[in-house]
Amino acid sequence: MSTVDGGTGRHAQVVEPPEGGGHSAPEDPRRRRKLIVLAIIGVLLLLVAAAFAWYLITRKPLTSLPILGHEPMPTYKSSIYGVNKPLAVAVSPDGQHIYVTQSGGTRTVVEFDASGAVVATFKTPADKAVGHLPAYIAINPVDGTVAVSDTMAKQVYVYTANGTYKRTVRPAGVKAWTPLGLAYDAQGDLLVSDVGAKTHAVLVLDGQDKVLRTLAPEDQAFSFPNGIAVNADGDVFVADSNNGRLIAFDKDGRMLGSANRGVAEGDLGLPRGVAADNGDRIYVVDTTNQMVKTYKLRDDGSLAYIGFFGDEGIDDGLFEYPNGVATDNRSTVYVTDRENNRVQVWSF
Image (tube, rainbow, N blue to C red):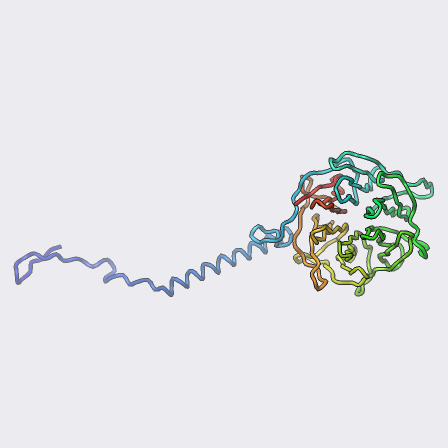
């Protein structure tokens, strides 16, 4: 509005104050910073709550969350079919010979080539007094022969690379045994888990079946040790299945460390097959958790969990009670998917 200036007689413009009276006070920078901090805290709390809810629902390690990084894991490549309830798998270093034990149907060993075509079916020795159930399998790096543990016959049979029976392993001084897990070291010595005696153990046998040494945990007795693997340094990894743990031993048989049963990240449920690759990774099939968990051996002898792959289901890349695992020298991982009647092939 306008008024008349009493002294000049001129009209003067009067500006009315804004509603609320007076000028706006400048914003307090401290208050602004406080609001930003509170907003960040709120977002973090929401992320923590979401991660916790996700874990309660899935019971999977938190490293599988997309927002949390971990070492690269192999991805699904293909599957080999033509096996009935496969238990274990062994692969030649070049990936050209893939041997699979099957616990269903004819209960024998099937050999495949790299394309997944059947090459041979192993014949078990004729013995009417016993049945047969091939369990684990291992390839001798020295001569290429193949060892197969038969839990029903309580024997270990040795075959040529193409499936011709050669002999039966008879460990000197062992009157009765029930062999289960198998592995060869670089010298061609055979490691066998024996679950027949009251105290379970892993026996190391030379080429003449002489017992060189026995591996056993220092803290707790083995309970049905299954898969065995040996790395390039001669360290031995054993799935202590019914105790729910993976145990590492050095080449002289001294216990180093273990990954144990539990629900925390990197813990195990029911470990079965074990394999070691040329990248220092140790793969363990966690049967009841429907996945393969991966570890590395630290310098202090402890096992560092680095990730997992797989989940439960019938589609590609999913498992229904996996059991065995093997690797070749081409960064390829093979996993027996028992109830889906296939061997899955994964690669980096």
